[in-house]
Length: 203
Ligand SMILES: Cc1cc2nc3c(=O)[nH]c(=O)nc-3n(C[C@H](O)[C@H](O)[C@H](O)COP(=O)(O)O)c2cc1C
Image 1 (cartoon, rainbow, N blue to C red):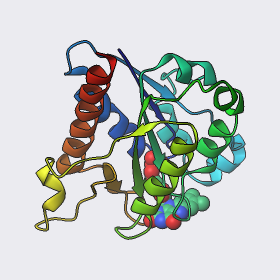
Image 2 (image 1 turned 45 degrees about the vertical axis):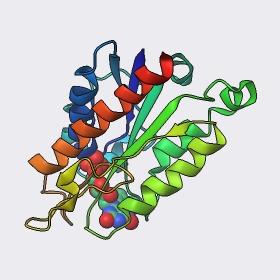
Image 3 (image 1 turned 60 degrees about the vertical axis):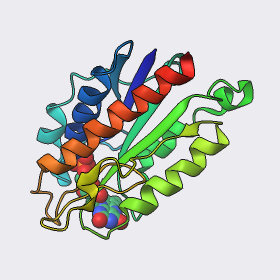
């Protein structure tokens, strides 16, 4: 049973979350877990102006995802930073290249799940995940979120991401806040939860 974690990250927050999602999924017997990154579409000079070059080097070793790899997976967990309350353009462009998979019904019945990050607490994490789900539904995915069994999403003693829609992290206006332990726990829970459901579906 193959679990594919596909992410795009500019400054590394979503990469950190992707690693935690993978950790959680790997804990499930029978799950074979792979991490892939979405191809960058911005020119190098733009990335330099955005201050993203050094951060992106920390995950440049992760293989770039191909569209065909989506068809080979049993479960796919997508990670994206928020862009104006939606998924990032890099992810959109990648998904818009899956028309052939849609035409062949290649993704129907696979488990799909989404995690996200935003600069601010109320900057659109939930809308990013929910609008992402629309695309997954068109492709026939069975959508899985982050149930309240992950109690960490109830916390109000510290600033934290995480909602029933999926694990999230808050990067801060200047991007200086990296995922907290609670947010990483949410990501691990989501990875494990998705893999567990995918194993059951495979049976
Ligand atoms: C063009 C653009 C639009 C963004 N839109 C939002 C937004 O709507 N809400 C928000 O809180 N953060 C927004 N951000 C901040 C990113 O979501 C943040 O940098 C990202 O979550 C960090 O994750 P990463 O390091 O994995 O890229 C935006 C950033 C850029 C560059």
